[in-house]
Image (cartoon, rainbow, N blue to C red):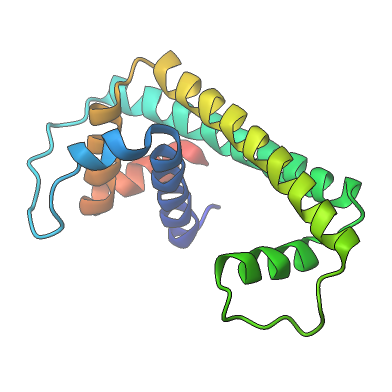
Length: 162
């Protein structure tokens, strides 16, 4: 059985994926955090399509993670080392335990370019998966909000995913 934590994690992952897919336009459509948005009721048919889209997006995320891992390893780096170098690139004040070699820097740049391409492809695939189920950005996001706010609806989604 899927735990309540798993469904919440899945929904949060989906929300993050949707943000990655739709970016700033989605944020412009989101209510302020202080507001309690009025969410239109979610029909059973709509919830079925939502779950189908959720499962498709999750599968894309799994495949994308595997592709990213393969890209890192293909350059002779570990995920941990890539993450260390990436964190140091993002935060110049962060110190690496040892210096980044020229070969590591070259591999890092190559991996980063590949990962950006993989991410763009995944974003398009996730957007297609959501659209294939007949959702526009706003309605899909409203359903995510409804699930987060309504424990009964979250339970229903959890049961549908089992």
